[in-house]
Length: 156
Image 1 (cartoon, rainbow, N blue to C red):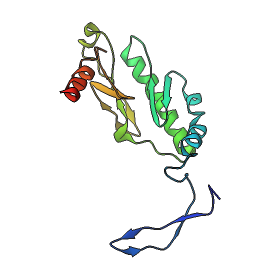
Image 2 (image 1 turned 135 degrees about the vertical axis):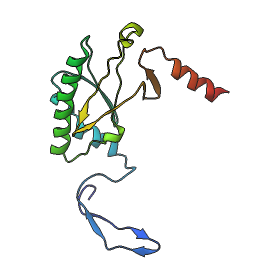
Image 3 (image 1 turned 90 degrees about the vertical axis):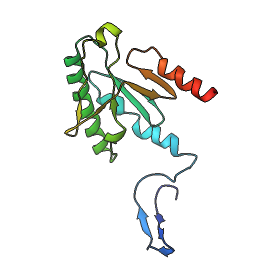
Image 4 (image 1 turned 135 degrees about the horizontal axis):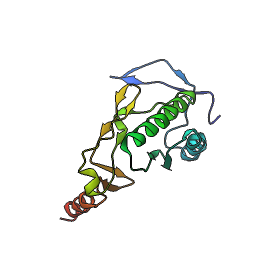
């Protein structure tokens, strides 16, 4: 069967382990893997009360717009907690090391030195000045300077 009755074992320095049953997941590289993943996470957006979500394959961005940073922080924190609970309920794990936050705004607004400090599972999410999403580098001022510079480096 495609999803049940599967086993695996590992080899370390030529020594094979006993077979262990695989109780979750789909075979890596399988044709149905991406489709089943999308079906599995399809209801994730329903747990968000204050934020918007963009999902493409396994890349997910949760965002909130507004003018009051403290309010954005609180609402994103609430929604991230709901996402984290959804992950736990669905036997998934959020990778805190892959989770980042960035505050976008005008040069004038960003000069106020507001920071978006958000915690996830009691640990601060790393604040960055730019973020790569689907191959595009988005910087805080949305100037695309970093993206253009990286493209120029590839060409040269």
